[in-house]
Length: 409
Ligand code: NAD
Ligand code: MG
Image (tube, rainbow, N blue to C red; front, side, top):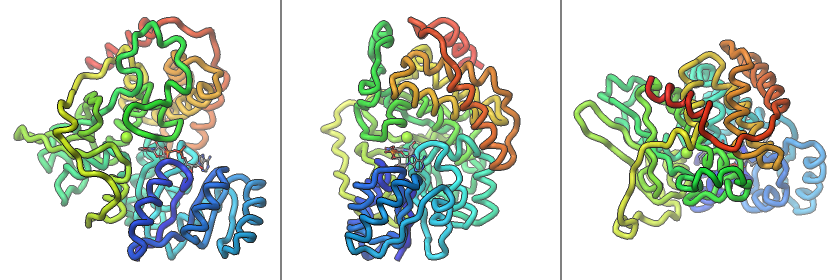
C-alpha cells in the first residue's frame, strides 16, 4: 500500500491523479489532500477518499470547510496555511507526494517533500525553474526519488536507460528533443494577436489544463519553463535541448543518441499516462487511457518553432543561459504577466514585453537558499506589477530581434 499526499488535489493534475488512484484502491491510500479555495471539489474528494488531513491555504475557507466536514460525518482534520502544506508533505506515514500546486506557491511544500526523502511526483515545474540547484541538491542529499509528471519529461525519462544516473554523455545521449503542440495560436495570423482574449488563450487544441499553464502553452513559455526543467532533471546543457513543434501531441518527447537512434514515448494526450507511470513506477498499471490508434492519428507533423511568434520561448532559453537567479526572475515575471492577462489588465502581446523588461531591470543574483529564491521572486514580482505601458501592435521588432541572436548562438 502506497500512502499519498496530493498537493493541489482540486486542480487538473490533482483530479487526474485521484482518477487513477480510484482505480487501484488496493495499491493507494490518500492521507492528505490540499487546495487553495475550491471547497466544493475538496469536500467531494474527502467524502470519496476519506483522507486524514485536508489543507486549505485560506483561513476563512478552512473554517467554513471544517464545519462542512463535520456535517458530512468525516473524521478528516482540516488545517490551513503554507506551514500546513509543508506538514502534510512531510508526514512520516506518507510515502509519495504528488506536487500539483501551480506556480511558485508549490515550491515550499514540494521542497519539504524532497527534504523528507519522499517519492516526489513532480508536476509543479515552477519548483525546478525557480530553485533548480537547491531542489536537486535537496533530492540528492535526502535520498528522495524524483519522478517527472510533465508529459514531456516523463516521456524523456521513459526513453532514457533504466539505469540513468544523471550523466547523459555516459549514456550516449546527444540530444533531448522536447515536443510542443504550438498551442492555439500556432497558425493564427500575426495581425490577429492584438485582440487575443484569455478564453482564446485557454482553449488548448489537445490538452485540458489549468488556466495558468494553458496561457503558458499559448505563449510557449510553458515549453521554455520545460527546457529549464529538463536542464535540472536530466543534467542537460541548454545546447543539447531542442524544441520540436508537433501539433498532434502524440509523440510526447524523444531522446536522440550518438549512434543515430531516436527513442520516443507515444500515446494519446492524457495526463493519466505519466501520472500512472510515476505512481506505479517501475510497474505499469491501468488508468482508463485508450490505446493509441496510430492509423486513426494518420500523419504526424514536426516543425521548427517560430521564434518571432513565440518570443517567450527565447526569453526562457536566455534566462537558462544567463544562470544565477535569471530563471527565478523569468518565472516571477511570467506568473504576474499571466495573472494580469487573465484579469484582462494586460494585453496578450505585452506578456513577453513585461517579462523582458523585468529580466533587464532586476539583478538576478545567485540564489543559494530558499530565502534567497523567495526574495528574488518577490523583487521581480514587484517590478512586474509595476510594469505598464501602451501595448505594442506587432510582436516582431525588438523582441524578435533579440531572439534571432539567441537562437543562433
Ligand atoms: P490548476 O490550476 O488546475 O490546479 C492548481 C492546484 O493548485 C489547485 O488544486 C489549487 O487549489 C492549488 N493552488 C493554486 N494556487 C495555490 C496557492 N497559492 N497555494 C496553494 N495551493 C494552490 O493547475 P494544473 O493544470 O493542475 O497544474 C498544476 C501544476 O502541474 C502546474 O505547475 C503545471 O505547470 C503542472 N502541469 C500541469 C499539466 C496539466 O495537464 N494540467 C501538465 C504538465 C504540468
Ligand atoms: Mg508539459
